[in-house]
Amino acid sequence: MSDNRNTDHAGAASAPGSTKTALKRKLLFWRLAAGVLLLAVAALGTLLYHEKVSPVLPSEAPLVTPGTEDAAVYTAWCYTPLDETLSVSAPAGEELALPEGPQIDGYTFLGWADADGRRVEDGIVTLNADAAFSAVYAIAFRDESTVSRRAPYLFIDDDFCFHPAGTLSRAEAAKLLYESLDTELRGSGSFTDVDTGADYYAATATLKDLGVIEGSRFHPDEFISLGEFFEMLSRLLPASTSRYSFSQIAEGDTLYPAFCLAMDRGWISDLSVSPDAELTRAQASHIFNLLRGRAPVAETDCAKVGTVLDLSFDDPYFWDVAEAAIAHEIEQTDGGVIWTSSEALPLREEGMFFIGTALHCIGADGGAVVNASRGNFDFGPDGVITTGMPELDTLVQQTLQELVDPSKMDPEQMLYILFNYVTYRNFYLRDGDHLHELGETGWENEEAYQMLSTHKGNCYNYAAEFYVLAKAIGYDAVIYSGTVTGRPHGWVEIEMDGEMFIFDTEIEYKEVTINDKHSSYYKMPYWKAKGWHYYRGEEIEAELTAKGYYD
Image (cartoon, rainbow, N blue to C red):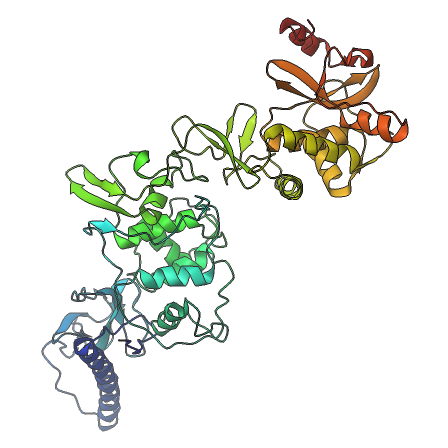
């Protein structure tokens, strides 16, 4: 059954059922009463001034007699949703700490608001007259600290990837936040860009009624920044009394209190964090685990989680992600929480494998290789082999998706297709001044990017394009800037079954399309290439000789 009751902007919330309706009515009555009280005090003061009559004051606020050091004492009347009124008093002009509000199941006490609805900062007031304040509450977060079976609230996709560096949209963040609240309340707040049929409609409608989000448009598909997210959370939790020196957030900034709260709660630990930074899925798992009371595990049995292909076992967010995305049962022990069972993902064997055309790698421990190297291969934040140049990686994947299918082709079939693609789908440009020194390294990415984006280049571009494509399908290719028949040249070599082979796409292109010869320079052994006099520099030649490649 839906409960469409709203709450005030400051965050006070009505619980479902008659009890919570009564609480809300009482809160409204108390606020009206506070307003009437203030108006009555003001009217009485005006009357006494005109009639010059000394009032009879209550014992808590004695009259100040001229020439004495006695000070008037004023009282703060604090109204709560329960049948009790708290009061504290202090001499005029002195700071007064308002009391803590009573605990109410399902709600979080946020602080006190004056008769105009303004929140009292840090719960400290200075009185120059009697004043009335009302308690402000927000719906509490779910407490899953003692729940024995924990269901996932973030999910791993069908390719066994979590996408930890992926951003959360505003719609996803609102839905997660709403589902983390300990309520069945369904609000009616509307946004012009949120359809009532959207799966996040109940979240945005209720959060708007609770004063957590505002405005007429929500922009559900835009990513949510840390600043926006922490500001939303700050409207559901008591304010921080701490002060921090953030490098990108000044103390007078409107977001400063929210980031102080984030530091207090352990959501962040970096004082240089930017409020404009995107909230990632990994960060969200950490924050919502804390909000829901899901403590970190005391054990680290990765087999109970399995292999997440874009998250290594040693990633600092690994267990947060596991807690948020893997269904499991727990047991509380003296040493902390342990997982007794789980719906673990498969624990993969060591080695490289494809998902589509994306090459992944599994380490000896069964964990994904992410943001790390294995041998001469580098793997990025998504666990996919990378050149280290994101725009080049995109072109490489587009080319692989067009040309090969690892599920139907063996590696050598794919290598041959890629060799012919580089050789015959590009156009040769004369060398000119575009040459590299003997033994020069580090040029392959830029040269490959030029060739993949323009399909034009010289020998270095041909070599570099084939090099990055061969690496992308798992071949431990080597690229050289050397000489052939004494002239500067670039080419690729790959060791296969203990023998080194030359792959020279540019020479085959010129021999076939320009010189009308039908020679193959694919997988050319050293003995066959002797006439071309490939030279790699003295040190490399000595190394190859020592390995017996010239025998």
